Amino acid sequence: MTTHDLRDAHDHADAPWKHDGVRVIPANRLDGNTAQTPGMDRKAAINFARVGAQKLWAGTVTIHANAKTGAHHHGHLESVIYIIKGRARMRWGEHLEFTAEAGPGDFIYVPPYVPHQEINASPTEPLECVLCRSDGEAVAVNLAIEPAEKPETVLWVDPTHPHGAV
Image (cartoon, rainbow, N blue to C red):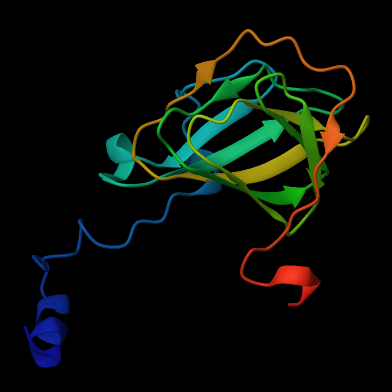
């Protein structure tokens, strides 16, 4: 199909991408009917049921002030969390023995099957994030893990920029 053909198709009511092209999901139309973990509210924006996404799930998550989620993992899925507002404290490991923090503008990557817990580090402000997963399904496996008493802080080391070089 040439650029001219695409332009002509756009001018017609039966254009091939009219209903199967770009989708805008308004903020007030997110779907709370998704896998939940105690201590957080997930809402789906993009998934198979809503837009036909085959390899992606995206939505929001809000953790209330001074709250923490239950321990969980997301099966075979990779997850990315982008912090919009607030301060996130992540704990992970077999006994949630490792910890790191992230703030507005920071990204968090969670590999498949990693037991983790999100904590709102603020006693007064909600933690608001955008969440993306590597498949259209919403997998959340809640775990009964007794957290370690004193988690070990882990600083990020970028393997593509060793020794702190950016």
